[in-house]
Image (cartoon, rainbow, N blue to C red; front, side, top):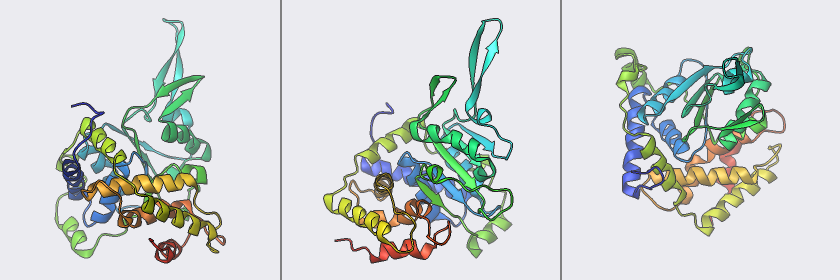
Length: 313
């Protein structure tokens, strides 16, 4: 089957659920976050996972790549990481009397940027073109990245030592930001009592590159009514008029919200977006794009208040 084809809604939903179930073997007690991560992948977005060390951020990234049968590379972001270490470099080959481009780890279907906020702003900016344009430019030449291309970045909370705040332009390239948190007691007990679920052999491959691209193509056909589009516009306007927000959501954020809602609707086996889909993805899509007037971070209560105070009709 061709990657340009699309899957019927029922098949698409079943495959998306299979991916989520496979990831759930490694990441226990986090079904809601896993489902959002799958929707982010289906919407051709990029995912930022922010939380304290040791709660399964990297495990989720590995499991999602393995369940989809995608080739992935991991880069440990550090303060001395250079842009060339990420995107590649041109090397002079004397035998051929020319420069040859040697691709960096960004040339992979899934790039795991581990602890991305430990790198300098200069290195973080090297990801901007790759994430937005799906290509990189080196020495005047443009190189296309693989398809699909999915960045899963993890970061520690910004108050941790040795971290840099991600600039707004970088944050906006991430379709969603998720926090895993500690697992519920029953899931943590199962983790403590069982085998090491980080073992890659425990994660079943339930999809492949072609099927994943067909799933992504199917998302584009999920219908958005005028009523739902007006609801999204109301949410954008409310964010711009809220007294506690420094700067409201942009039109691009609105497009991101609809893309995520389309993917989430597909996981519900529907070929149209309902207001509930917008509400389900709203915190993950909106929170990292908004900043409070008194501090860079935005209280979760404000994000929920925007949703609660905005009428659907």
